[in-house]
Image 1 (cartoon, rainbow, N blue to C red):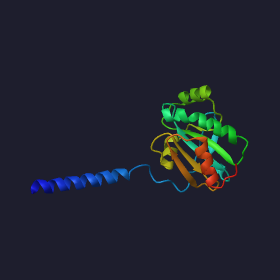
Image 2: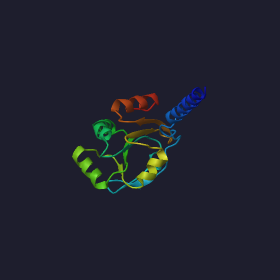
Image 3: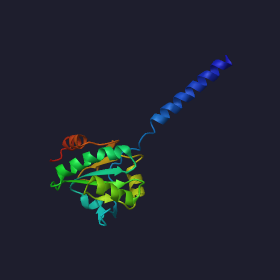
Image 4: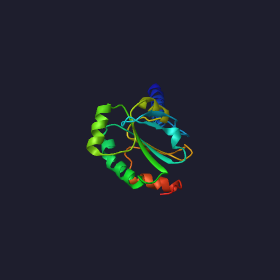
Length: 168
């Protein structure tokens, strides 16, 4: 009888821990994108508050991240497709990586959008990033419309832009 009781208590505890672990995925989606201004790879500054009025795709990545490298051609295609659209902007934020490695990566693989290299840890925490790649679509009012975890595609981004009513 005692063995049965101990077994039931153990099973209940396992169930509680399993449920609590399932609920501990990514942090909640922030309602608004954090305001930040930081240095970019090309020596300029990117200021999130200046972006109000346009859609901003904020991509967190690292050169050591396999999925980040895999998604890079999708970001290149997205940038090419929206290059002349003043209402859509793509930026990348470095996540736990070396600036020299980032510079080599963009030199080798292409990409001419802003790449934030300073205060990146704080920016990642403020967005709630837990792993890369993570990509956020921020609307013209500064609200976070959607978070993509894992690699993102042009189709993913365009679908969400269309759902949100963005002009292409």
